[in-house]
Image (cartoon, rainbow, N blue to C red; front, top):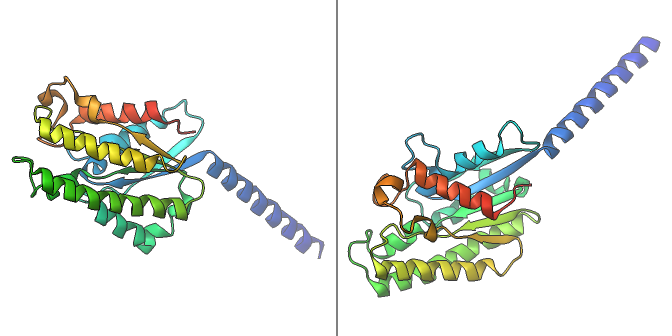
Length: 233
């Protein structure tokens, strides 16, 4: 009988120690969920990293006290309605309350596709019409994240103009970002992170892999901007 009681006590001690270890591990680790399109996916970076893995590398350096784990849900070619579908997917929806931070970087494809699928000839009317739908979708995305998770901050990354010499496009990108910033200001847990200024006075060949997507140097600019704008505690 004493042996049985002794074994039972040992088992309890082991279970308690395991629980405390797991709790400690959990406290020392953050979960970040990133939603977006090819820019979040990392297209254009020859190493396939993009800004998400750039953040992961920077935040998980050997001197980091708290480790940060990233869940990259970026999909090439995705628009805001695609993110809405992702958030309704049970495999993702049930995890939303576990995140410590969200990153939402979406809208480039919404803008381009509203203009007919390219940026060769700008249609002010089409882009303006598309912006209204885009903002409506973005509101749904952010509302879902706020409702499903009561503690996480939401970093909303702004758009950039890949054709800096096109002033009509520059105006539309500015208008998009202004509307996004107005949405973000509605809740203190949301933070707008601009990117359009990052590529001003930069040689495109040095920072882009194609007409739209940054290369490693371009993504590093976005990574640095996010780290400058938000403290991953």
